[in-house]
Image (cartoon, rainbow, N blue to C red; front, top):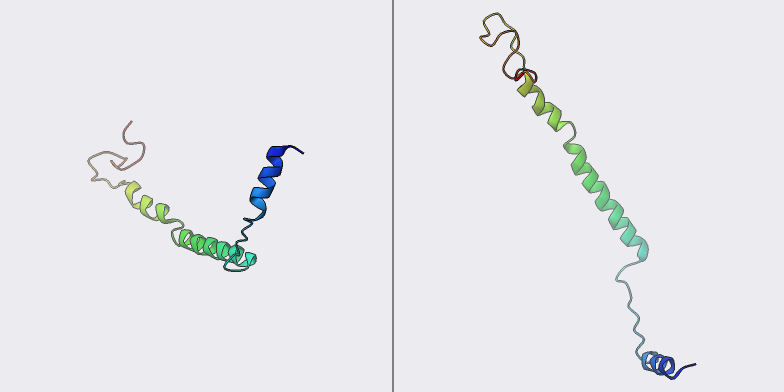
Length: 80
């Protein structure tokens, strides 16, 4: 055994500090799982929101008095 490892062992032998968790380890997993479910619920409330607002922007105007022709100006292919 070398002199440096002996000195390092003796220096750290008296300063052993044990840190105790403030709650049981399974509680950290339960908190993480509960927060995941809350975030999933928030995400779920906004499901299909883009499709609700996107349909009104793509309304076609196919009535006879439409000045832009058979395709309305909001048609996705109208810019061609």
